[in-house]
Length: 302
Ligand code: CA
Ligand code: ZN
Image (tube, rainbow, N blue to C red; front, top):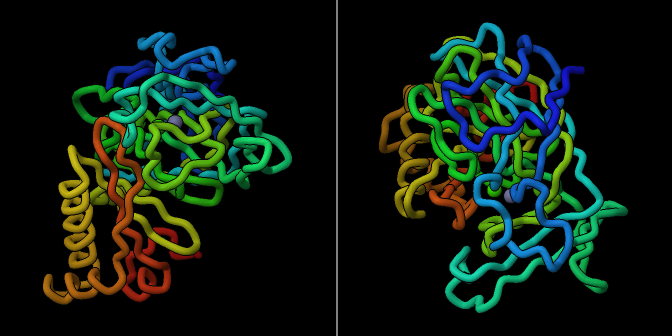
């Protein structure tokens, strides 16, 4: 299997980065990833403020996919995620939903073993490893790895886990896929500004859907199809993702706008991925049985 080592990282996802590796559609590729702090926090006395800003939010890549050209969609299926035996959390003044209340910066090391993240001696959580940053290069300007957008990026969406497929736009030849920022577990919202941040290894199957353009990044698993959109605030992100799904379903089904609008009111579950990144990410979840009836499932085999 092709492996991209975590020495090949970028801090922005852009069209001009030199590829770290090249693959063909159908290939399995392993990305070794650093955590979002560039692996610089190892002890509880290591504070977020002391992390070098220039080495925060690294993503591994980019991966050049042969035959992928603008106007295609890249399908990235997460085959496996391995995480290291400890994770890092921080609470930092002025960051996240509680930043105005947090007086002092603190760090917590969370042991990760036995299938659990051990937050404290009495509180532990089943691991649910996910990918925070996954994106393709935008056509023109590079986007910092900490920011989500139409290219994917730091979407911090917990459904990007083993078994899910992520559909991203191909905006430059080769797509230039980057992956980083694994979390051993995280809740919707990511309210304190992080999950259990870990380094690790992700193996993904790469496919190219020719001449298919989606209105926004899409994640699909056996249970649901998720449309994702990021904007300055959640209202805007919600409106964007709703309109993207509305027009997408209209074009796939030929149904009238009003009818799709009603349907989305019944079966389009509006959810929050994260509220702590430079742009907020809203998510529209459409259950697979509905997606199948509408013919919008991207992986019709499941
Ligand atoms: Ca993140
Ligand atoms: Zn993270």
